[in-house]
Image 1: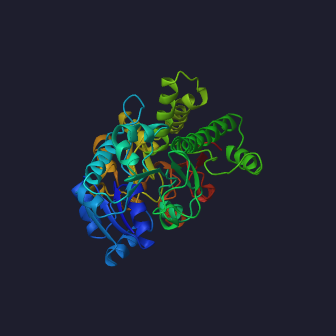
Image 2 (image 1 turned 90 degrees about the vertical axis):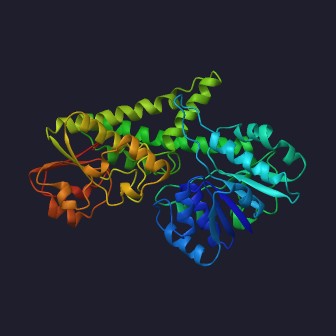
Image 3 (image 1 turned 30 degrees about the vertical axis):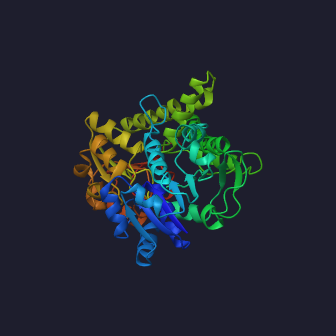
Length: 433
């Protein structure tokens, strides 16, 4: 099948690579020429385990190319998948301008053809967005039977997105009335027997999952701080809570440590809270998530200040150890706060290369940490230095290598939950344990 994928960020690049592996002919579409060039060279525009090989193979097999010409892409495909970003506005609402632009381009192309086309929207949008955009832009094509429209939310974790695409924990597809998706969207596109619901239900499931994930992180962190104040081990408390798999569900995210961050959870929580305010609803838990997360971040900064160390080494600046994504990474906030208070900061994160960061991530670096290159050290020993507080936010270095670099003149603050750090020759303290 011929598929056009709009937006070559994390979701779009992974979607394109995985669909190409299933034998579909993919044309990626992006307004950024550099991403188009990388795709046409079989290279990934984002750092994601396994994706680079997928794109190289797809390109060598003639199943992958990219263009900035939306009309050409739509005319040469049977299905269009929209994966463009929906960032937060200053009010916490979602900016749907990129989705709206792409849908206008698709509409313009489809008006000049009579063959039916399927549209799959993966961009995160609040309930009612698909129906509203269709009403504004696509209702004539849908009514004429030229266009079938599905909302297909993604549940991809950065650092495990390829594996999550191939073996998803949840598959939801939304259609206008919850009826079957069109036959052209076969199992090889939508996966094995997805749950079919209405557009709005599928949209809300995405945000409900994001809010629940953020809730779990904030809850575990609050319990961790309470346990710390009572001289108890917060990790043990949460580990025991997670033993109850009948009532307490999955242990994923229920781990005290890093504040939640990244390009998705904060955005989704803000958007859901904004939607509640617009509807006059009282949503105290959802409203409390950002301040709870901010309080946890301030608690970490207080613990760093209490160490009395003027030098701080951050191990892992990105959201997790498998990506280079700095968008709303809590460790970026920590680094900025420490620099503003006069600390000498060094950073070790082997995945980071400021010169190669592009798209929204590149812009985030240039705006939030333009001085990143001067703080970043490729050599672990140079990053750690001869003394200072080592803030372990990610497992981005091996324990043997850390043992060679860390001395009794250092202190270790474990934010990740890495108990083996206690074996290092330096005083150890856990953030919530």
